[in-house]
Length: 375
Picture 1 (cartoon, rainbow, N blue to C red):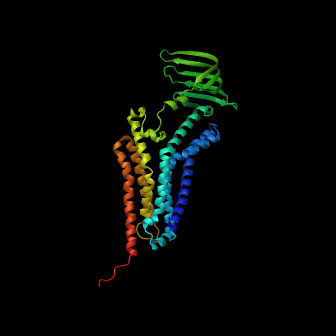
Picture 2: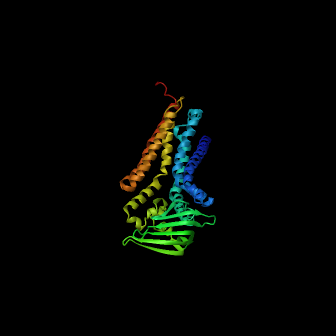
Picture 3: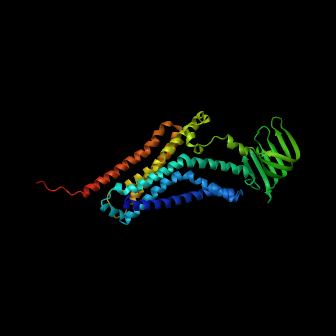
């Protein structure tokens, strides 16, 4: 790598790291608003909140990196143009492709990193996030119950408590279980505690009564007890019975879908779209870079600035990203849109490469001596 290329590459790398950090922190702040409830209101330990926050990074980093890269490119080359650095480089005979080479090399590195995220890291992070969510719902379920309100802890299962003391005891408990619509059950107790058993989470209620209504006959039966356990298996069974999201599945599972997915046309379409998305989305980094370089390095130097070219590059990046997201959604429902997922980045890169190559020929013509008069 030449000294000039190293200089450009170093500036681009630093700007990319800064823009990636800025976007990551911004998204982290929005994610923390959702996760902070676990710490502030649920009482879960701080280490769990930090772990959940860390797991969110791979889930959006594959999208953030290409955008951060193009932002760094626009900032760096526009600043160098205003400082007349690019003007001097062009006067020294460096063409558009030579100026774009460091950015293209960095885009190649971003592509490799996004591939690693898409194929291995992001699915593992999604799986761990889901597992931790169910861990919170089971291990910290007693902490997720708020005082003085009816807490929906499952499908048709509500728990009310008046207060919780420092030892974790729940006072003034009412549990309404309508999971069996024909036989709804209401349990009232003066005190209760949450316990974990091999079968799942349970609430042990003390000194209360159990009321069961048989809707078919309208008969109400009551049972007074000193100690009664209410099964909250609903909190743990969903983790085993639910259909995994396609983002949680490994690439091997997408290549060889399980039998339950093969029988579900909608799920099969989502798996197919996710697999192609993981393959094609890293190319957006190269497409964004080539479009930005074509906009910034085409044409002659303008002393009034190049805000118009920057705006054009941003508009093209937004349109390409929107098209990629739309095609990913359409491909999940209609397989005919799968080839378009590959064509869109290619259709963006080829014209940009032509513009850069054309600019190189223009510089070569200006540097070559004019032919002398015929003798």
